[in-house]
Length: 307
Image (cartoon, helix red, strand yellow):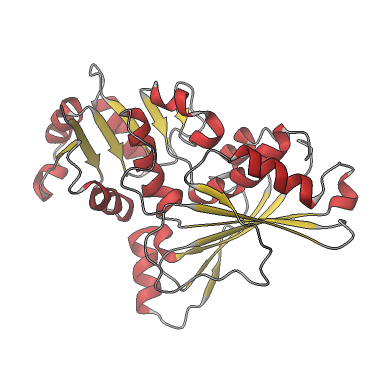
């Protein structure tokens, strides 16, 4: 028996990538609306009620509206928007942190943000293990490909070839902060410095740690060993055994649904940097949605992923 899937917002970047990953998979039957139907509330309601799983690739308010339209149904949800990431009744869709069984049993799953995926993959296991304090004022520096900004930013970067780097979120209070703080169990939200570079996809998330000033027991080796053990069973999150001299993003990178972690430290262990490399459209968005869908449907989580 196939599982009926409706991607609400299938014309956007994330929705298109999810649809591409699902194309040809016999386990799923896609419910597809044409351009006119996508703008019809009644057509969307019918599709949401007919689906076994609805994947929402919508702005926040539209995602909340989609859930309302599905009231009275048994439809399960994967929401790729920010709308429900810290909401009561929703399971945070980061199986490596939250637990695969919780996602497998959930009706409502909220996909993590791309930047929080990198940050939480680095920090949350070390806070849980007591290697890093929960009350430290963390900072996170991150750079992403422009595809994460939606159609308007994609057009801007592709039309104006003079743009090489864009810093944003300069007013602080970024929408990703609540999930970063909650799922890393931090007393304070981190200071978040996001930026965009002139590559379509890819992301690097960097958490600098002034270890000597933190009053904690973390060493680079202890961090590596703890993270290595934490992700030992994962087919998706891997630790780099090396500390390379540089980390590069390619302008023409192929889709990738993995996440790679690096641990760097100075010789005296007074400073360290935790770095995650991922695809903002892969493990940071569409790949994570497919991973969660596989888990919810009782399939191997890596099925159909580019790893």
